Length: 363
Image 1 (cartoon, rainbow, N blue to C red):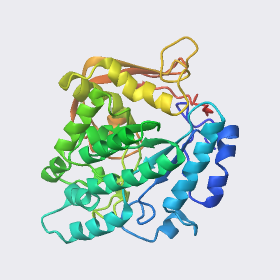
Image 2: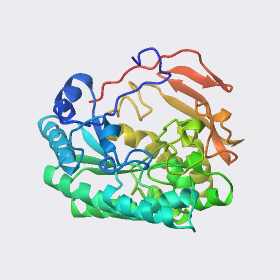
Image 3: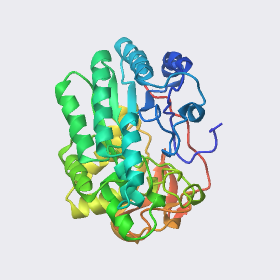
């Protein structure tokens, strides 16, 4: 279905929802080259928007989607890692649904809260902390390789690091996103509508931004992602809780890291390349082909002008999405040429018309 429709090489990162899906994991790894599987820890209690607790309807399954299900996913992946070389991993969205229930009720009833501050209060860092601890217990029992995705807060980061310290034999890696590094909920509440920036986990506070930047510089965060989730403005609506979460951000990954990270905070270019490219390639079975500039690698390159200043607009991001939460932000450091497999795909503000992207089996 994807063949001939992609500008870039791609792999698939799958979320086993049913027991039958768990049984397919060995085949997906060995035959299809899928090396990563995802579990959304809040789906056992809420849908994506946090507006419904009818998760069976949302998941389109009558199977239990609980910690027992996660444990069986971990067992299946751990067995594969014990039998073969390479890294097959489980990636986690960490927010604890039972706590979310209480905090969402409280946030909705608090007249002092609105917008992104209300959403963050309804899904606070404590829900991340407990979820990470639950995952750490199960990982300790199974020995599985884990990726803690899109850590949004100081509390979530500290908890993930503490779990790693208590389990030195486990392969535990940590991710944050460019929006959790650079956007703060209080800024949106002070400057107009905020539903476009509703995302899971929520945008947090400036103190969380600073903690994540410090951890990235120190190497405590393994990589940075955009977590691009294209979501049209009509799906946001004008009511916080039914609004669809997510937004695009791939085009801004390097500009934010170069402008805010390198120019303002002293993050080295080497650290940026590691966090945005090499480390995720290493985690997901792609390194050597991706994530490095070397003979035999695929020549997927981004050439950036470190002195080029751009004001972010929706159109500049080249996404199908019709809004951007970074709209109006000035960044210095912008990609001027990109290559996919040695073929120029973007130059002189023009995108090549071809679709050379290939499916990549991961090892």
